[in-house]
Amino acid sequence: MAAPSESGHSSTKSSTAFGPPFDDTDADIILRSSDRVDFMVYKVILSKASPVFKIMFSLPRPLTDTPQESLPIINLAENSKALAALLSVIYPHTTLGPDEPLSLNDLIAALDMAKKYAIATASRRLLINFKGSKAINDSPLGAFCAAYSRGLGEAAQIAARASLKYRLNLDNIGDALEYTNGPALHRLWKFHRACSAAAVRAISGVNFTWIPPAPIAWWSATSTMCNCKPRYQYTLGAQKSSWVANSSWGGYLDRARNTLREHPCSGAITNQAILRPSYQASMCDGCRQLICGLPEFSRYLGEEINRVVSNVRGLLHLS
Image (cartoon, rainbow, N blue to C red; front, side, top):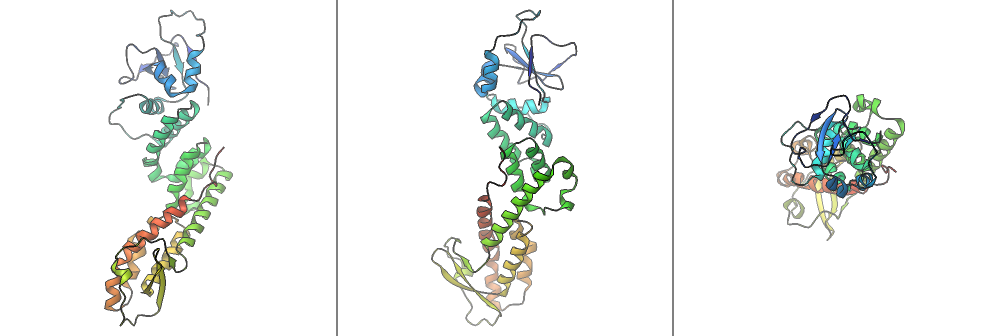
């Protein structure tokens, strides 16, 4: 990315003013975006937010033929949408008003600017916006590729975790493949595999001691007259209570494990498509009453999946 250049006058090409809230008449510097939009801002605010700007403003202005009363202009490589997004999170009491959501490229450009100018506060707030953005929801793999290519480690990790709801194969990667490279995809693939292994391991076996204690009907009640076969015995809660369940619960756990191998996230095992076959299984009336606890059971499993997956670290570290 090209470094900003400072001049004491406008170039021959015309520019337009961004307008409020970056149009104060007593501003002491102009930031000009790559699409030639001018932001009239204050050096003191930029200096407080960014050590890079602080050093830049401490240097003497170059000698020019421009009258000293004109505002210096810093030409930036980023467009006006990315610059407005960055300034809006470091300026006090700034509201840009309703507008269309930032594109993925603009979000990445704003995060890249925050990194370039070492604006930690802006990075944190922009990451929150990035995590809740339409780009992350609709195309987490594309978001990962864009963040990874810029060396934006935290953004890449956010996008990678959001991508866990998708299968990581060429059919699902699609057009995103042209925006990344082999090492990036290999690292993401290793992350997916590690998350899958951790998720499957978490709900394998019969010991679910991490389920919190509660007076839950499906846990405390069993049907002594039940003839449903086969039966499975589990250990639940910190008290290691013994709980016997019929095959509909075992069937759910089998489906959950198979799903987690491709989609290592909580949403994969709590949706109706994965729960429904257990309700439709043949069982006695007593077991039919207990199966109503399956959604809550799946929610506990989902929380454990989120916990173990969040502990998968290091594979996406960017220097």
